[in-house]
Length: 145
Image 1 (cartoon, helix red, strand yellow):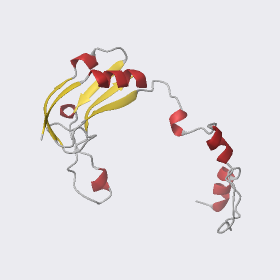
Image 2 (tube, rainbow, N blue to C red):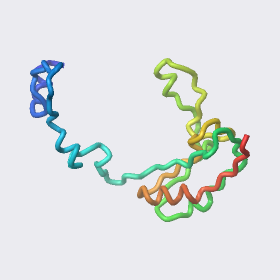
Image 3 (spheres, helix red, strand yellow):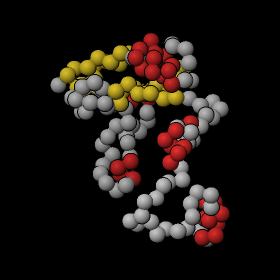
Image 4 (spheres, rainbow, N blue to C red):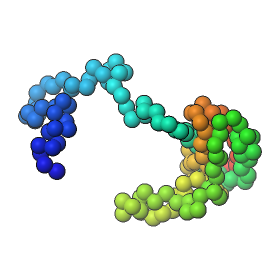
């Protein structure tokens, strides 16, 4: 990418005087960050935006006996409740894409949870509050190992 094009896009963000090592420098965006006025990606609202929350295992090592999502599915604003059985290839391939491991981590755990916080059920709803409330309505029966 030509340097001139990059300067046109970022001319208002910084100057090209990069001799900053060892000098106290005030960031240009500091005031916005400190006062909470800086826009972040999460602040953008899009038409038809849905929110997803996960029900996570409270146990470090447990077998999943049963998952009951019936109450969550009927709650207002809930678009979809997803379990591991609903995902065709239920593997997190991030590590293998980075060439750093095997595809052995499920996206949603179906039989065993081998760490606290393992995602078991995903709930998609119109608002974040509705997604959180639906997650609270999901019942998972664990056998702690």
